[in-house]
Length: 214
Image (cartoon, rainbow, N blue to C red; front, top):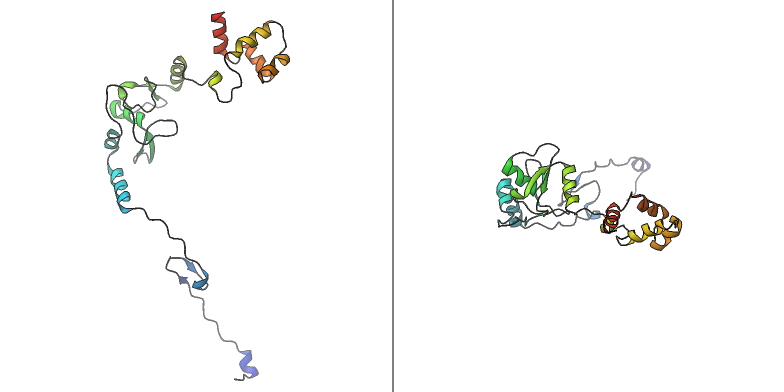
């Protein structure tokens, strides 16, 4: 079929692009065959989801009472724990996780005063027995930790290069008049560390032990 010049100059009006909607719900302005559908998501079992929602509807007091077993000693929290070993559970009121031992204190004695911490007298982090808990400030909590010798100090610190048995040798070498530069290579530390040991700035407990035994 032949076209005249007039027919060739006139172009056909283009149809407006229609918005295509695929089965997956994606919108596009191009051909459907060029777009790959989204991968199918794994479905959660309806039973598990329903049980989770039903569990969250239970008041926090009821969920707390089912999280441990009573005994003659500590009441150990058996459900979810954080990376520090403390029991935790979800609170819809606070929209977040709360510590189980703090909740145990609040259910027994009321609200925790502002700026106070709930400390363990039994030194078991997962214990939620109210009789094993007491209120104190952060300084009191750290003092109790130091008195019970539960703080990380000396060779308990992972980055420590010295040990308790090295301190008497270092003090003896300093007493003989040796320089810090000469002593440091023997123990693999800097001369500043040897100076801190000699002045009593670091390794205080080991120095006290040497003085008491000496």
